[in-house]
Image (cartoon, rainbow, N blue to C red; front, top):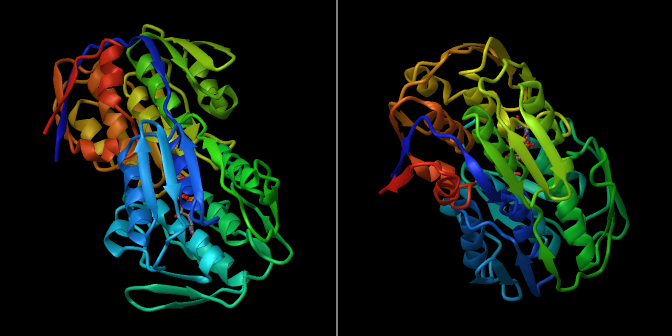
Length: 416
Ligand code: UD1
């Protein structure tokens, strides 16, 4: 495991370009399986999770070539339907490959997916939806086997607007003989990106961005090139780092609308924000004001920003209450923040954060992706030097984080 060594009392100043979205790239990479041809993806972030997805595709028989940010995926010669167990355990989004495999081959075998341990993260909504599409599913202690002669169009009602289940079912239903309607779907911007990608291939999908998606089955899909949307969580992360250090930043290559729930909260905390075309300027105040936050499915406040806001509010003036409604285990960075002098108490799904003047540097341990990013934020504000151990978690989702931070004036190095 490696660590970041971060000098505190930092102030972010300058400009940063936002990378492509992790959560859009992952299902789109999986969707490249569908047409059995060559697809070209641009703006794919070079992070652990996308590389993990390429490994799974290669293991199935795909050829994946990287030319900088251009990724060429050929899925013609897939020769097995069993998703590699070890690779699958490393990443939860690998479950979306099931939808693509079953749509193309009527066959998929997989084990329970892994990912950051931020909650129970079951896959019942995926399984129930796939069953509605006529897929036979049998489970044993190690594997889940999905098989069918034909995928049939269906009406599906999700109990909860799960991002992954929505994406999986969109892929699985793409080649049916009729229309599939999925209600109470996730409305995240990444779902719109997936719809745009699939429709460019020739799929007939409508409704992404609303809570009902309709998928008219097609016979085949063609080869495409596609540009992945900007990462809204990386955008929010740089804005928070700047807000918490009283800095000034211009964040380029962003989709302003996608981050509006984040911008509203940063303004409420006292930041000055200017938005234009594809950039956002943020000017952080001397000291932020306490605010309350509740995570909700999009367009509510994103759970992926919760830890970073929590870390930011540890030094705000007043008491903030943060309610986590999506993942039950997403306060894992709290004990580490407390070691740095933060005053946080947890009661069920709420964190009560009493703002202190200053955190102090310490040796702290990242335990998940966004929690790790939150600890780096705390390190930026703290007095003295902080060692953030287990950088690998952060590298799952942030491209060149330390280089980008160094360009913004931060003294940060990575040590292996
Ligand atoms: C995706 C994102 C993740 C984000 C999350 C919520 C990707 C690669 N990851 O994860 O960054 O934090 O959306 O915005 O896009 N659930 C069930 N049964 C299921 C599926 C989900 O109970 O079958 C529950 C989960 O345990 C969780 C909630 O639904 O409590 C949300 O999960 P979901 O929207 O599926 O998140 P992911 O797709 O895993």
